[in-house]
Image (cartoon, rainbow, N blue to C red; front, side, top):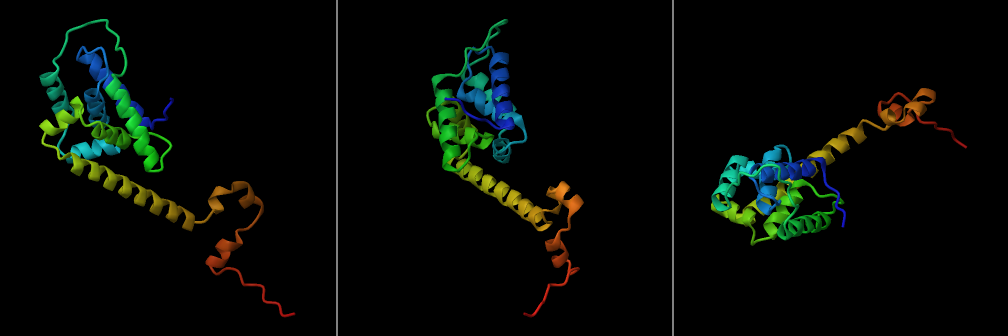
Length: 191
C-alpha cells in the first residue's frame, strides 16, 4: 500500500534513514524512526517529545547503548524492519481514526506507541516516559492545532470572500461587505 506523508513526516523518515546509516545499521528500525521524529524539530511529535525532555541525543545514546554502533562504509540500508512497517501501518490506522488522509509525525509517534514491544518503546520507558501520558499529550496537541487553524479559518471567513475572487472584484461590488459596513441601504419597495 502507498501511504501519503506530510512534509515533516517525510523529513523524519529521511532523518531516521540517515541516523541508521550513520550508526552503521543496515535497516531502519523503530528506534531510528523515533530519533527522526525527535530530530525533525517542528512537527507535533517533536514538540511532544521535547515536552517530555526527550532529545535526539538522548535517543541516539540509548540506541548506541542497546544496539551498538558499527563502523561500516559504503553500505546501503536494506529498508524498514517488519516492526517498522507495522509502525507505519499503525500510523495509517491512527490517522484514519482521527479523520486524516495523510500520515503526520504525530501519527508516526502514535504508531510507535501502539507497537508496544519495540526498541523505540523500550527507549521511551528507559527515558522515564509515561506511555499513556505521551499518547494523551499527542491528542491534546492535535486538538490545540486544530482549534488554532479553525479560528484562523474563521477569521479569514469573517474578512469575507472579496479577496478570493479578484476577477469578480474587478467588475462588481461586494454588496454583502457594503451591507456589513452599512454603506448600502436595503431596497424597501412597497407593492
